[in-house]
Length: 94
Image (cartoon, rainbow, N blue to C red; front, side, top):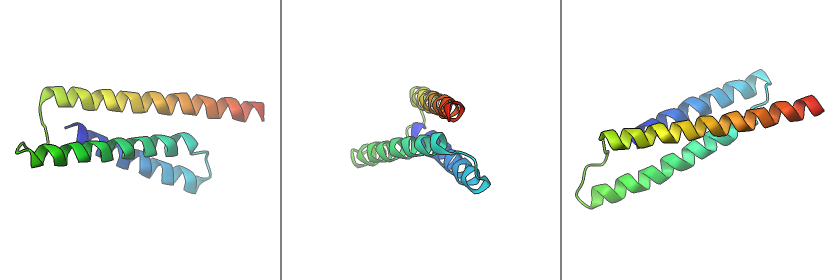
């Protein structure tokens, strides 16, 4: 479940990044968050393949895995918020 949640969030943030860039808005926080989410999705993909090779299901749809996915999304939101505040502070100084 965390794999599916992370991929969905990575796609959403990547699309938001490209639209922000096209509109000429600063998108550094979105870009960094997208890269972090894609990295996490890659990591969970390796874990899913390993589980599948061990004879388990490819996706773990348990409540614990959903809670882990929620934690990953919360950390990504926190990362975005911190980076966005840094961007805003740098823009005020300039």
